[in-house]
Image (cartoon, rainbow, N blue to C red):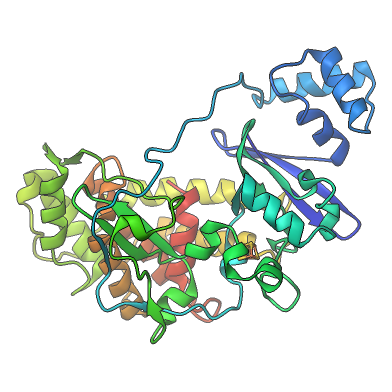
Length: 415
Ligand code: SF4
């Protein structure tokens, strides 16, 4: 279960998210005070004592009933120690960024409104609270705006949101941590966004995550990284490793073979949806020898995935509607994606690409960033990409500048 705090004028709520079952439970400050005492070391008497110590005493019978209701909802679990990240430091191998790509942030704060969780390490929490101690009295109690990112592990903490944005975003749309402490004071995730790194075994590749309008509008700007070797990256930079083996249809290939495959395929030169479907079908039959077949407008192989994504988007929309305002960007983008999926589920057609240059960039990121290795199999990842592009094409461009960006951002929460 994840807990997230949402601030409103005159108060705040905490939302407990049960990711496994796609549910959310909105609780108040007093209930949260009880939940945060339930750290696996206390019985009911101890929880009541801790709640009282924290300034919110609770009656024993009310506490027992509340804990029983959490249990009946399946929201209690035993303590599991945090899993360390797969590699603590970037390896000192060459760093290579997506060629001929430059990025410029427009400073409008879109990425500060896109995600439900912006994560801070403990030193980042301390720095942010020192720079904005008056914000919800965080200088006195960082727990007013930071909750553990997941379960009881507070190695990483998620910042509260207010009015659909990170609580540190000021009314002018600027990061107030940046404004008071300079760029280096922001959490690393914000400083490096939208860059994603991947260690292939031979080098570290860097690509822009296609999840923000700026990624698609960057004409000038700077290279996404100036690092030429992993040793030049900040020590805490998250650099996951490409899996050692990758499923491709009837075979499993090692990562060297997969990198050679990904670098050799043509993707994004013609209709991206149809290319993905053709290549997925060919891989399912011939594994890593596949190079794609003639394009065919029959996309019935995407049917099951469209239906599964539509169901997940239905559920997510109803969860978000239970605690987000209608204008909240996360709720709004989820509803746009849900509506598009509902239309596709009813009538699975392939519209023409209205923003081929956006799709072309996504295809480059997928190939160079080796993103086809991110699912259970390469053909599965291709079909997932095909559906995401179809959804983006189905969203009304009058409503959003770069539909593919909101679909890619939301994809983190959809199958
Ligand atoms: S910490 Fe600053 S840059 Fe990061 S999401 Fe919040 S407002 Fe945006």
